[in-house]
Image (cartoon, rainbow, N blue to C red; front, side, top):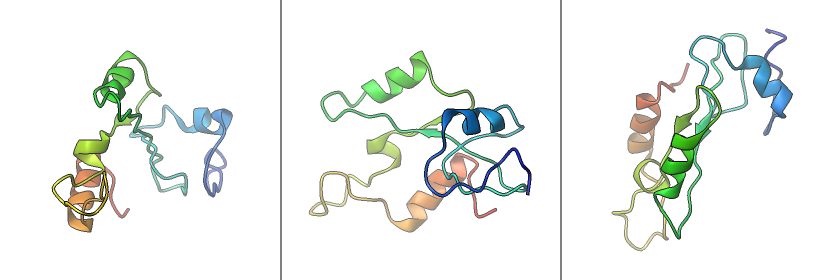
Length: 106
C-alpha cells in the first residue's frame, strides 16, 4: 500500500487529504483507498432554502480537483413520488452519475 494513502474508515483529516491531492486524476468520494485506487472528492453542499447555493459555493471555491454534486439533479430522483423529499435514484441511474464523474468499480 502507498504510505501517502492511509487505510481510512470514514473521514479523513485535512493533512491526510492534502497528502493525496495533486496526484493525477485525484477526486474524492470514498475514503477507502488502496495504492491502485484514485481518491475522489465530491462537493455536495446544498441548501433546501436556496437550491442554487451549492453550485454557487462550489464556483466560488472548493477543494482542488473536487467535483460538484447537485442534490436534486445528481443525488435524488425527484420523479419518485411518495418516497420522501429527495428519494435516492435507482442503482442504474446512480451508477451512470458516478460514471460521468469518472468513478467506477475499479
